[in-house]
Image (tube, rainbow, N blue to C red; front, side, top):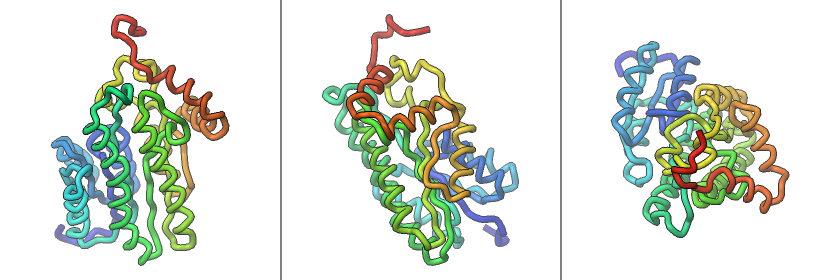
Length: 269
């Protein structure tokens, strides 16, 4: 790295696009250096762009749905010789559609990325933070974390795990100087819906939050040590609060109206 940086170091996963890229940008704007990770080559373009602000940015192209991918990211972190001050576990994918017809391999890969990589990276990095008695952790969940998610059944379950894991870790780490915050976005204007095969759903065709605004709320909540924060819009916050209080059957019906696929010829304009 050359000279020793006086800036703090943040690790951001899923940082080549969407909320992850905007979280990385928030970190740079608040004087963090970065280790950023994604499976696609765009992570290198993101690093080039982010480093223009004067930050050290190390891109790691790795598939975090694999054990080896997580280890390669961890090795890159330790090779910097620096402490991790903020860990933003944002990488995740969705698989939309009816459970009985979805690809099993796609759903198992989603479980590995959305759940296993979060646990694996937390297990590797958190001890270093606790030993120093300081650090901030952000885990990206979803408004689906507190509701059944028909036609996103496995995705919703992975995000329920992420929220539960974040809240449990937060309790365990009380008085260690390390805080854990859950970010629970609603529908956000990213590649998520196209990649999840959800183009022909009401949620994909409806109004969405700006990922930069979502990231700003998430970053600010993480730095303030809050327990959780919903997305940027009032709609996302209402959805999140509804998930806390409504009966499960009611929430399932509400979700299904937004996520059930419909024929392209019936597409709303």
